[in-house]
Image (tube, rainbow, N blue to C red):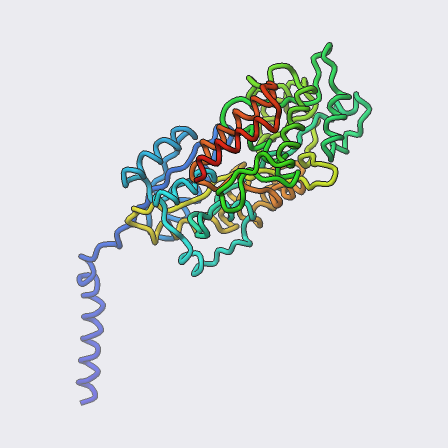
Amino acid sequence: MLNKLVKLCTVFMLLCVFCSPLLFAGEKPAEKQKITFWSMVQAAIDLKTAQEAAIKDFEETNNAIVELTVFPYVELQDKLLTAVAAGKGPDILLLDQIWVTQYASAGFIEPLDDRVSKSKLRADDFFPGAWGAAKYQGKQYAVPFDVGVWALLYYNKDMFRKAGLDPEKPPVTWDEFYNYGKRMTNTRENKYGTAIWVGTGDAVQCVVDAFIFSNGGKVVDDAGKKSLLNTPESIEALEFYKKLQTISPLGTVGRSEEDAFRLFTAGQVAMFMYGEWGQDTIAARAPDMDYGIGLLPRPADGKSIGTFGGWEMAINKKSQNKDLAWKFLEYAAQASVNKKIASLTPANKEAARAFLREKRRYPDVIYEQLTGALYRPLVPNYPEIAEIQRAATQAILLEQGNTKDILDDTVAKINSLLK
């Protein structure tokens, strides 16, 4: 009986060995899920290459396909809005911080609170300005991707030395900024203390807002219902920006931030206000320039507070693969992956520290300015508000009226949009 049982077991095992390939030969590999991701191409930064490397790792780990498409800024802005308004578009959207509230208020992107609460992502992992800008009406709609801050103070050390100033001590206060600039301004030699601008777009407002924040003011109240641009703090900040025009080359109103940057790299202006990403441009245009970086000058009794910028990742409300899209957001936001993003500062603080130490001069100064920065108004119609602000700044610089009167009119226009 025992021999018979052994023989039966042996036969069964042999059948299993030889028949297994036949049983599973017709079984297909699990089909790969596909998600689409629209991002922005950077002119000075090969961000796409870094994203593609991270995407490859994600695809291999999750048996997935991530289709990445990149666009220039304006084209991304137009194509994204057109697509999602039609109920289409990518699964994952890369949004400028100033777009998040517009997309959230229109119902174009998915609320993420439930997913965040169950994940390892925590607000403390990110710069406060990046995490806060991803919210709308108390709900989380995006995850920070990368960050930037307006504005740090770049300064030409050689011009400081020539003026008898310590090249290791940039101006700290508004008064020092103006006085140092006045000392280095020589119109006969075409040398100036700084170069402010108005130009087009909201770059000028990023700088002006930083002066307002540093003086204790705000553009709109915390509820997003009322503009505060005509408070004493805001008026004083705009008056100071206007004062800087006297130590700048002629043509402020028509000058763009790019024009001003070229004046700095050409050695015509001693100090220039810009974001940390400007180091890439200096390395390309003026590799031998001896320059330093300091915090944005502040009022004597104030604190240097920059204006936050950057990009956020969101999920399309109409996506058919929200779970996989969320997996990618989690993956891209973790420090080990976020730090691989080339040149732009990672939004994850741990990754940012490593990135800044490796790729940036004055990493501690940049980190401090990023940590304390505030975001622009989190309101759906921010682009229109920014244009009203820009026009007001231009009117003040052209002395088309009293600063307070101009800002009173500006507040009335903005408040009509906030109702």
